[in-house]
Structures are given as C-alpha cells and as structure tokens.
Amino acid sequence: MRHAARPCDAAIALGCNDIGVSAFAAGLYKAGLFPTLVFTGGNSPATTAVFPRGEAVHFREHALALGVPAHAMLLEPRAANTGQNIAYARDVLVAAGVRPRSVMLVTMPYMERRAFATCRKRWPEVDVVCASAPLSLDAYLEAMGDQETVISMMVGDLQRVIEYPRLGFAVPQEVPEDVRAAYEDLIRDGFTSRLIDQRPARRAARRRGCSG
Image (cartoon, rainbow, N blue to C red; front, side, top):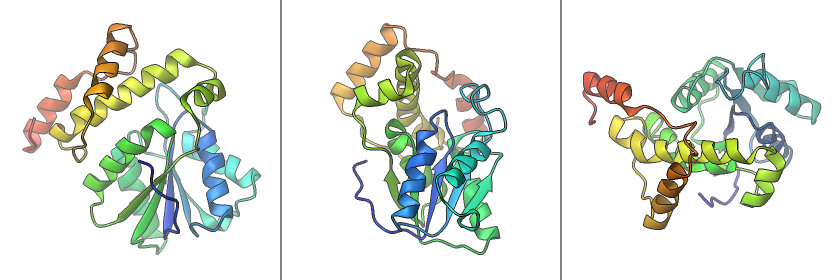
C-alpha cells in the first residue's frame, strides 16, 4: 500500500506463518507509533505445525521477549480468517476500553492490500494505515526459506483481492493488467495450493443477499 508510517490509536498484528510480523510490530511499538497492540489469530493449515498454541499466542510471546510490555498488548486467539481478525480485534479493543479512530494493520508484505480492503469493508469508520517489513521479494523469500509456499500464498492472496469484493468480504481494488497476467502465469505454472474454491462462498454470499 506504500502507506507512510504515522502514529495511530492502536495496532493490529494479523496472525500468519511469519513471526517477522510480530517482530516488526514490536519495533513499531517501541518507536512510539501506537500505545496498544492487538495480536489476532488462531490457527490455519499453514500455521498449525509452526505455532501449535495459535498464531496470536506465539506472536505475543515473541513481542514480549523483544521488550513490548504485557500491559500494552491484547490477545485475540480465535480468528480464522482476515475478516475475523479485524472484527474480533475490534471487539477486544472495545472490551478493553479502547475505541480507536485510527489503526495500523501490521501484516506480511504481500498481505497489506487484502488487509486494507477487508478492514475498509468490516470497519469503514476507522482510519487505516498498513505496515509491513520493508523487504524486497528476494529478501522475503530468503527469510521465509520456502519459495514455493510463499509464492503459492501470494497467488492465493491476490485471488482473494480479486474475488472477495464480489462476495461482500472486501472493498474493490484495481488490479493492473500486468499483475493479473503474472497471476495467471503463476497459476498455469502450478502455484495453486492456496487457491480457494469460490463456489461455496458465492452460494453463501447469495444467501446473505450479497452480490455474487
């Protein structure tokens, strides 16, 4: 999203398979960009083996070890998707007496855009700033150590950016033609393990009265 980092009322670090999200969020807290940090996320097929007690639990412990004080952190350990990350984290903040006008979403680099689109749909009244570690693609692939999985997850993430607005899960965003062409090439090359079957979601969206 190329958002400039600026002070916010709270931050939400979205659980995933990248512990670097926790470390980056800890650095942003220590830089004074927000007073309250929510870690959100249960488990997914990509994280159960890595974070068996849940993404948010492990992320919070990592941030604590990096010097973020316990009183500055809130835990949301149930979310199973990005929409729930946003909605449940908002509920945790409100329960703690925090009603932010601005939030910083801390994510993996390739997930910023989907997190932003989801938050604009689920929490339209809040001012959203996205943040992630400033890594090149090559540096990120090296840090994660599993090129095939990361690229497959990037392809799946872009699929959700494209498809979720018509299902009512996110606001629409422009996808440039060269990005769409690269996405289609990667699907043809077999990076498909994180793609979703859109048919059940479309049926559910129609039942809710959303456009499909």
